[in-house]
Length: 258
Image (cartoon, rainbow, N blue to C red):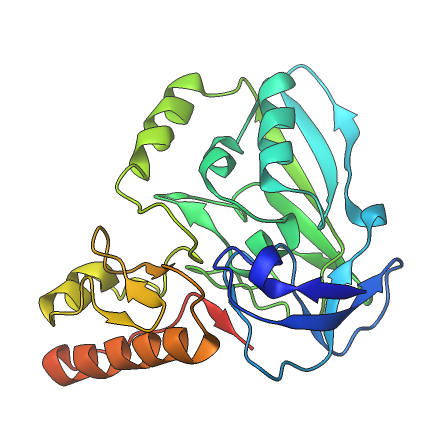
């Protein structure tokens, strides 16, 4: 199928490209785009894929008075998972109310908010090789060690949705800018914040073509209007260069560039 990334990706940058739909669990030697929420597509991406609708589901495997085990397809939206957990009174997915994307991409980035992340309640992942336990996936901050495509995942959640936590997390991202973006550009270095460092080197609000380092939060890149891959890549590279020159810190991208 053809996907126009200027319309599909969250940052609204890219051109129409052919993307292979994976309707079965298989060995795919390319890049799965998921919801393209933290993705910057170059002008010549290679071998793109996307999971078919077969992998958009939530299934209860086991349930008792204190817990519930779920199998979830990796094409399932974070908002759908959040609302399912809330409806079923399950604890552990409250943070997904503020994180866009599909489960596969969220697992790949070990996405989270504050001390909450997707791997916390995970039991195992399903790839074409079979089940991969949480321990073997080698999760860490914004990292998952699974290299092959992920199709399904199994989680065990405790009962009792945490409404207080849900409310507190809703305000946690109130300072994030609106507009087309891919969320945070860089991972926070240990003991510091990428946004603070980028602002300190004078790049907050800096523009190149249609792209701008947000004037509200310097770790966000905003597509003001018709930004190109070159515009965005220039700003990402410039921020890395300036921060390294000033602080000696090599910022690591959270956004995936392909």
